[in-house]
Each structure stands twice: as C-alpha cells, then as structure tokens.
View 1: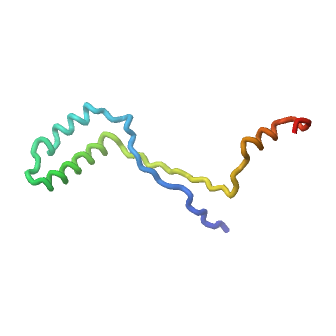
View 2: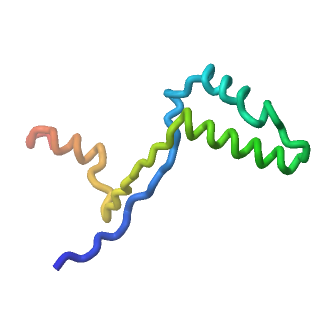
View 3: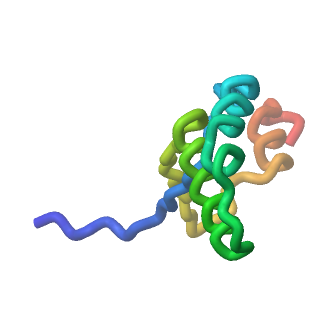
Length: 93
C-alpha cells in the first residue's frame, strides 16, 4: 500500500525575458487599440491598457511553470569541522 507523499514543492510562474524582442513589442503596441483608438474614459483606458499589455506580454514573452521542490531534513547534516576531521589521518585526530 502506498501512502500519499506530502506536498513539499511549490509552483513558480515566471517569464522568459531573454526572448523579448523590444522592436516587435513596440510595433505591436503602436498598432494596438491603446494607440489607434484609445478609450475616452479613464477607467476604460486603464482596463484597455491592462488587457493590451497583458496580451502582448503573453504573445512575446511566454510563461514558464516551474516546480520547486523543498527538501526537508530532520538533521542539520555534517558541519565543515566534522568533514575536515573525517578527512584527517587517524594519528592526527
């Protein structure tokens, strides 16, 4: 019988910024509704701004989902001094 393993990992979502082509992004922003036909109302403009930039970022810089696994230990492990002592010959200890 297998017992469920406790969840020790977390999910991290980030963007791969290295792939961003600024010239393409600038071009798409200039062609967007934000520039060509901006809303007159400030609240609508803010919503449009958010929607356009989010969609362009999704288009140009994809999201990465990473699993981060946290290792839990019940002890602290060996200290540097303990490792050094274990590497010394027996007559020097």
